[in-house]
Image 1 (cartoon, one colour):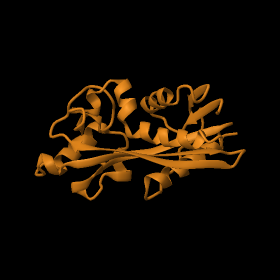
Image 2 (cartoon, rainbow, N blue to C red; image 1 turned 180 degrees about the vertical axis):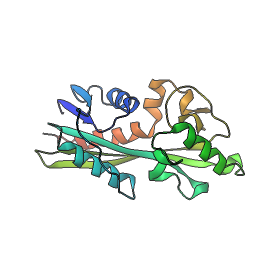
Image 3 (tube, one colour; image 1 turned 30 degrees about the horizontal axis):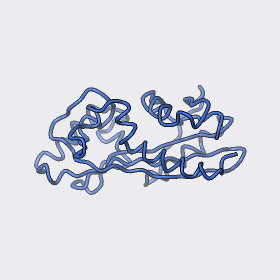
Image 4 (cartoon, rainbow, N blue to C red; image 1 turned 45 degrees about the vertical axis):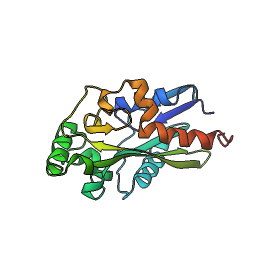
Length: 199
């Protein structure tokens, strides 16, 4: 297994989640080094964006780079916000505005029809080995009518899990790392690496 994995994000919450999810897999899980620039995200799918970021940031990292592209797909909105989840309301990373826009878009949609999926595509790439993989994880749920919970980030206060009767933002970190789309994508990645394919 790798000595170090660089997580291609500037979101410290994501780094913390991946550090917990990859515990025991790598000796260290690190954020991107300083001065790596900003990768454009031009893909029309989560997988395409994840691969683009992994390959781009691998130029700056001496080892494995893990990039994810994740978001929320709402059935009643034909899959929106999808790959535009982080900038749904216009400003990248403005979670409060994104949540307000989502609630407004679903204002007339009854609870039973507010089905959604959190999706995470993970790509890993090693520049020197010129090897990599892309995997996907999904978790189904519903969009709540009002936010609940103070944990998590992004759309977590609105994403309601029927199995637990709580939103992602109401889960402990340990619970979220068992149920989340990132956890499922990491499980898929570890299944690939478990076959001994990692240099």
